View 1 (cartoon, rainbow, N blue to C red):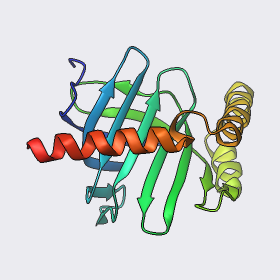
View 2 (spheres, helix red, strand yellow):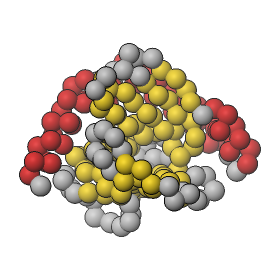
View 3 (cartoon, one colour):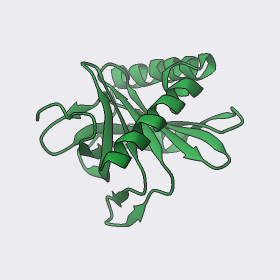
View 4 (cartoon, rainbow, N blue to C red):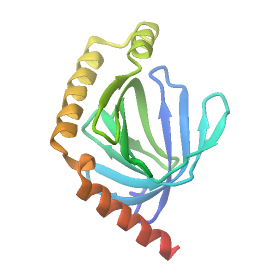
Length: 178
């Protein structure tokens, strides 16, 4: 696939370690692409779960994907403040169909007040055993949890107010053009 340009829409597909499709976001507007990252925004986007259930996102969300980090970051812009949902996952790949990654269950949620929670530890343990995650994957994921916590604590990248303000402004500009 050609690298998407600013203003293009792409689908996002999340898979599980065994290869089954986990979740699909129908349309995400691309705000920036570079050699290593894609930043996008979705707002009232149709999401389809692996069991066929469908729902629509409730608020604008910036999405951040990187080719070298084993996590992606969803920045949810809510009335009560900005919160984050960070998936521990493989670096993304892009093909003609969608931006794709493997979701490894562990998640870090950051609340508007700055509280952080590591989520789905039980699910990770269950799937690790079920699908035989290698010791290397386990090590990579735990190292990336540490990196993610460091980014959060330092207000780096998606965790800075300036980032959120800049990319939401750009999303609104591009949306008004369409």
